[in-house]
Image (cartoon, rainbow, N blue to C red):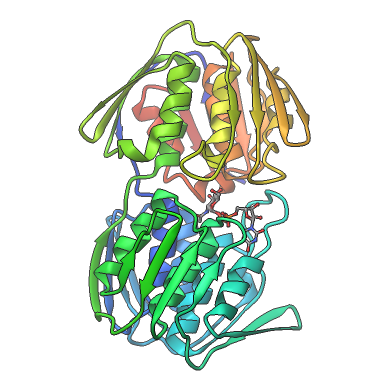
Length: 417
Ligand code: UD1
């Protein structure tokens, strides 16, 4: 079992370059099979979720190479239209292959996706969108069998702005005949990025990143090259690390406009953020606060993925911070682990009350999920003594090498296998 050991108490200093966005790379990798041809995707983070996506591509018959954060996919040789259960369970984003497989082959067979256990994460909106585009969906023996000899552009009114359902709809619509109008679309920057990738493939996309997206399917190019945007959640995590540990660091390769709600929250608690081109200078002193009240919301609101690291940072701010989680039901799984480190947090349904300013101490804690694991690393930086985080496979799904990055920022952090 691998673990991450962090010795707390050191102020951070140094600089790191941000990894590419996991949540952009995954839908773009899925969309790469839309046309039979070669795609080169740059700035792809080296993560286990990316490995899972590459495994799916290989299973489908594509050729792939991944070197130096660049993925090459040759999808001319795609022969299959199914994803086996073992691969589906490795991550939730495997469901993003539904739209592209259907668009490319006219059928798709897959089971329910896995991923972090953040509460019920149904895929009803994905399936309803495929049906709107003319697919039939049948459930048999735990498998979903989707068929659509020909997808047709349609109006898709999403009942909730789901990120994944918006992406699946955009990708499937790219392979459909005619125009698709998606309303109540999610507006996350990663959707804007997917739209730019689809445009590089020759799809006419308008409004990606706004709540109304139109996609005009048609002839696609058989070659595309694209670079994914920086990871705003990794950025939020390292800002939280400075808030927790104190110090001054530089984050390179950042996109300021995607971080507005995150920047507002950290500035409110006294963290100094200076954007200089694509570099962000982050500094935090001995005193931070006042405590925060944070409600997670779909973009442009405060991201649910940044809630756990921010909560960990709030443990240093004297007073009571309040979190309201509106996206996922089970997104406080890091709290029992933080309590082992001496934190004072009370959870009542979707609300968490954090009493900050108490000293934390090192402990053995288990990463409950991806961002919950990141929160434990942030808390460990301010704790007295050594914190050993086990179950780090969750963290590796979304961070290239957290120990490497923390060490580059002057922290004492080691990984053990
Ligand atoms: C994506 C992100 C994830 C982030 C989340 C919310 C990726 C790879 N993952 O996940 O990091 O936390 O957005 O910003 O981009 N829902 C349904 N039915 C559906 C689909 C979703 O009820 O068919 C619900 C979910 O259970 C959840 C909410 O909608 O409560 C938001 O989910 P969604 O936006 O789809 O998140 P993901 O795309 O899974």
